[in-house]
Length: 250
Ligand code: NAP
Image (cartoon, rainbow, N blue to C red; front, side, top):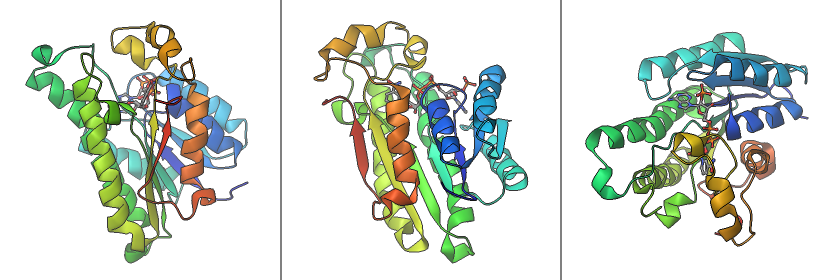
């Protein structure tokens, strides 16, 4: 059990973030649950987290907006205390499209939600964790995607490119803060059974594509949470700037 550990998981009202919140709590961590719209879902996750008798708070905030990010981190400071780990999990897909259907508005929405958020949240976390700033160190886990390596042609090249940016940032930040007590790593999930596919225009995507994965199925949010937790915890103490692919062999 980890004592006095606090994690902020962006986008943890549903899907991979929610499964991660439950797993951190099961291991004794206090959890800040962030969401953008679905307060009821966030409260349901908070109820599960509190059942482990750990500190917990929920905070609405659009992590693509700098002011919201500042408010989310201030809430962690005042309600939970010293941040030990940040999981940059919040992310979106938009309806499938070839390049011909991608305009600047769509691309910019993906970039600010999936990439800008990761930079700004990481900046706030590093400010609090860095031993150069009087902090105790910590970990950052980025939730990228195997799409960063596959490119997602005919469907989501824009989304895949945002995850490629996240991977580059993972390496760069990891090296930048390796001497400041902070480890930065990422997971790259494959097709995982969450609501994101419905938001991307195809609710049955996991059922359609799961059988084509080498392991012949989609993954679960809980399977991804295990790797996120490992990278955030002391168990991965010599890992930084690295990636865990959880994509059934893809
Ligand atoms: P999901 O089930 O759709 O959940 C998305 C979560 O993010 C929700 O809690 C949502 O909050 C929150 N959110 C969305 N935009 C936000 C914003 N601007 N600010 C704060 N929170 C925001 O998604 P998921 O499948 O678990 O995906 C989580 C991460 O895994 C994403 O980064 C995604 O790209 C990545 N990933 C997923 C898959 C997959 O197959 N599912 C594969 C590879 C990578 P509300 O509940 O309030 O809407």
